[in-house]
Length: 77
Image (cartoon, rainbow, N blue to C red; front, side, top):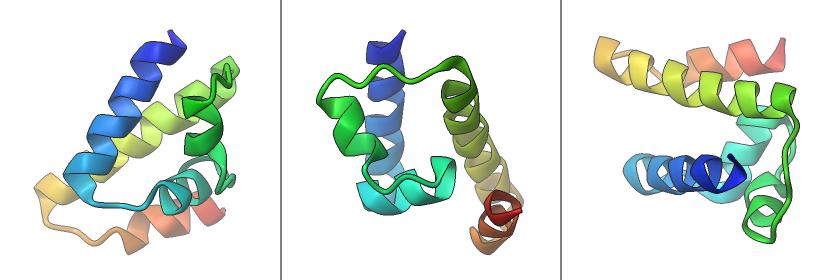
């Protein structure tokens, strides 16, 4: 499961050109998340769901032509 999540995160980072620390901070409030994941961190269910939701929302926002700022607001809440 964590390997699949890491593959999805890496693909997202390539597509979005978002730095790993920014992704971690925005998705799960942990700037080291991607680095830790690459080193073998096994995220819990809640963290995995947060990451998947962040990526899905980013894609939906992109399709709708919106700005990433809306996701930032949602993550900050």
